[in-house]
Every structure is written in C-alpha cells, then in structure tokens.
Length: 136
Ligand SMILES: CC(C)(COP(=O)(O)OP(=O)(O)OC[C@H]1O[C@@H](n2cnc3c(N)ncnc32)[C@H](O)[C@@H]1OP(=O)(O)O)[C@@H](O)C(=O)NCCC(=O)NCCS
Image: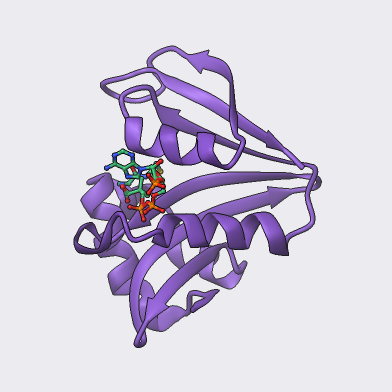
C-alpha cells in the first residue's frame, strides 16, 4: 500500500535515508517534507519499506530520493512508488539527478522512460551525476 508518510514514520525515514547518504538527516527537513506531503511511503503490514521524496514546482516534479529497505530490494517496491507518482500527480515533466555510478537506479529510471539530458560534473562528492527527465 502506498500512502503519504506521517510523523510516526520519521525514525524509519531517517534510517532509510542515512543508509543511502550519511548526511541525509542534516540535509533535509523531514518534518517539513511530511507536512508538504512530499514523502510517499510503501507499506507492507504497516511496515515502511520504501520512500520516494519529491518536490513539485509548478509543472515540474523533482525526485529527490527513492530508497528501498535493503532487505526488500528487487521486489518492485521502487517501481510501485514511481508508478504511483507518475499516475497520480499533475505535471509536465519529472526530473532527477542520479550518480553515473548508480547503475541499478539508472536502469530503473530508464524502464520508466526517463532520458539522460545532461551530465553534471562533480555533482556528488565522489562522482558526476546524470540529470534525467521524463516528459508526460
Ligand atoms: C535503486 C533502488 C531504489 C531500486 O529499488 P528496488 O525496489 O529494488 O527496484 P525494483 O525492484 O522496482 O527494480 C526495478 C528495476 O530497476 C532496475 N534494478 C533495480 N535493482 C537492480 C539491480 N540490483 N541490478 C540491476 N538492475 C536493477 C531493474 O531494471 C529493475 O527492473 P527488473 O526487476 O524488471 O529487472 C534500490 O536499489 C535502492 O534503494 N538503492 C539505494 C538508494 C538509491 O540508490 N536510490 C536511487 C537514487 S536516489
């Protein structure tokens, strides 16, 4: 089941985020993101197993993070979250940045018709980033 995350989820959101980027908690105002309904959660038996964090500015949705619990990967949880975003929101295009080294995520986004439109040099501490776009 996919739903907006709530304040009850903060600890797990931080755990999932920190697993991906140690500075996750410092870099993000989780309460504000929850308040803005900017965190979608995938729940199985009330347990939060994946999150998609995004922001919408006019006709553009920006995906900030898509993270799945490492014990539950390759079960299409990220796909379900992405499909939910693609089908339930009003937008003209969806944008994101992803490390050029993150082949799993690049494969996932390509599956949903995202195209690489730009390479951002040194976007991350240890790598460049592809900027990817999906047009509705
Ligand atoms: C990237 C990530 C979100 C994918 O989550 P997931 O739930 O395992 O992904 P799905 O099961 O929905 O996989 C969908 C597609 O992604 C690609 N993919 C995902 N994991 C992959 C892997 N380990 N190797 C190769 N391709 C992979 C495949 O194309 C897959 O389609 P398929 O199952 O039909 O082959 C997950 O690995 C993760 O949380 N990684 C750490 C955080 C991260 O890097 N996020 C992206 C940048 S914010």
